[in-house]
Length: 242
Length: 80
Image (cartoon, rainbow over all chains, first blue to last red; front, side):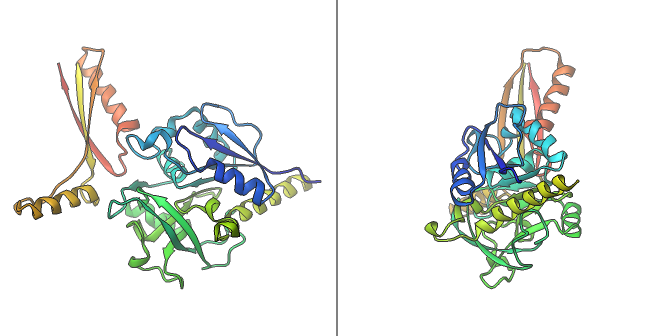
C-alpha cells in the first residue's frame, strides 16, 4: 500500500505563490501538501520540498539573499543532500542560487522591466525527476513573472552544466527553436531552469503551479508537478521492495 | 567606527541599470560619458574601534551576505 505523498511548501515572509503551489498539488493533483514556516529548523517528514515564488524579504539586498539564511534553509540543504527532491520556482530558484544549492546567480532582466507573460520553454532533459512526463525537446508554455531572471554563471560552470545535461529548460520559440528573440530576460544561453549534479534539485523561473489546470487556460505546468509525484512514487515503491 | 561598503556588478557583467542611465545621460547631451555602473552603498555603524578586527569582520560580511561574489565586487572603507 502506498502512503500519500507529502510535499512541503516553504513559506518565507513575502512568498506569494505558496498557496498556488498548495492548490495545484492538492486540489488539482490529489497529493498532500503542507506549509512549512521559514523559522523551522527541522523539516517534518516530507517526500519533497518546494520553494515557491514571491518576494521573500521584499527582495532586499538581492533576490533570495536574506531568505537563504532562514533557519529552514539549513534543513532544506540537508534534505537535498540526502537526495530529497527540491523544486525552486522563480524566487525559489533565486534562493537556491544564493544558498549555493545550484550554481550561478541572477542579474536584473536585460531591459530592466518586470516581465509577466507566457513563455515557451524547451525540455532539454526529460530524464530528471521533474520532467519524466515530458518528451525530449517538448515545448511547454509556461508563465514567467520576474524582474531578476537573467541567469548568469561563469564559462566553466556553463560548460559543466551543459556537459552534465543539467540545463533542463531553455526559452524557445513556439516551434522549439532556441533563439535570441525567444529569450525574454537576457538569460545566459536562454537558460530557464537548471538542476544540480545529482539531479534532485531543480530551479526554474517559469511557474508550473500557475499553469496546472485548464481553468487557468493552460495545463503544461502540470507535467512538471506530475513528473515529480511520479518520481516520488517510484522512490516509495523502491523502498517498499528493498 | 563606520564602514562604508560599495558594491557593483563585476567588470564584464552587463549592468542593465548602468546602461539605462548611460543612455539617459546621452539623451541629455552628456555624450562624454563612456560607461556607467550603478551599485549599492551600504553604511554600517560598528560598535568596535579595533581597526584590523573590523576590517576582517566587514570583509566576512561582504563575502557571506552583502555581495554575491559570483556577479558583484565590493570595496569598503573604515571611518573613525
